[in-house]
Every structure is written in structure tokens, then in C-alpha cells.
Length: 154
Ligand code: RB5
Image (cartoon, rainbow, N blue to C red):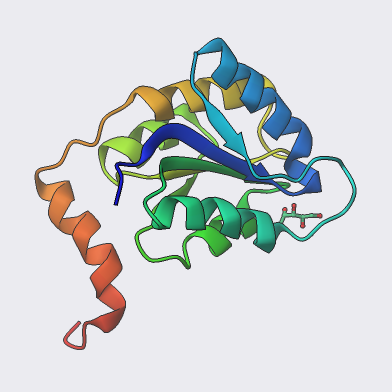
């Protein structure tokens, strides 16, 4: 398999469309390439389709990281986290963005347009892009995420 693209895969439903467009301009400003998988207007669509497209792009190894957006961020994170290998983090504060990278190695950032003002979304994005996974004890725990549902002796 070819190495994951440095491009970020991004998608939203109608309720996250405006924030998606804003985040794309922020990515442009930072010189980060992105692949937009829709939706392309504020016409009502179903968030599971768009969150799943983002999650699939990352879970398949094609993209190293993704951004999924809906109205609250809740539906998109529920969907994305169904995919093996996906660690989707709904971040509403800068601290959440920082910990999601340092401790959880989040590979999908989830945002909610209805709950996150643009100035906070911009800060959350930047932190999520810049912070590194700390590894160490967190490596073991992150590995457990994908194995935990198979484990019988909990
Ligand atoms: C759409 O109205 C809204 O339900 C959706 O964007 C999301 O917030 C679901 O969790």
C-alpha cells in the first residue's frame, strides 16, 4: 500500500457545511491540501454517509487524517468511530484538541457547527494539526481501543 497522503480528507452534512467551508479556507491558509467529499450545499442530507466517507478514507490508509463535521458533532463522531482503526475526537475546546492528539492519537477531528464558534474552531484545528502523539503509556491504551470489544476477561 502506498503511504497515506498528507492531504486531509474532509466532509460534512448540510448542518456542518458552512463550518466545513471555513475550515477549508483555514487549511488553505496553512498550506494544507484537502480532499472534500461533500456535501456541497446546505440542502438536507444524512450525516452518516459523509462521516463514513471521511472515516473510510482514513481507515483504508489512503489519508492519514480526516475532519468530519455535522451540526452537533455527535452523529459524525458516532459514525466515524464504528470504523476499525478510527479514533475520532469531537473537540469543543483547545484542551480537548490537545489531549486528543497527545493521549489518543486521534486521526479524525470532529467538529459541530452549531456548538463551536469559528474562532474556537480555528484554534482547535490548529492545535489538532500541530500536536503530536506522546506514545509511551498511551501507545498501549490506544492499541487496546481496537482490541477491547474482542476481549473476554474484562
Ligand atoms: C442535522 O439536523 C443534525 O442532526 C446533524 O447535523 C447532527 O448534529 C447529528 O448528530
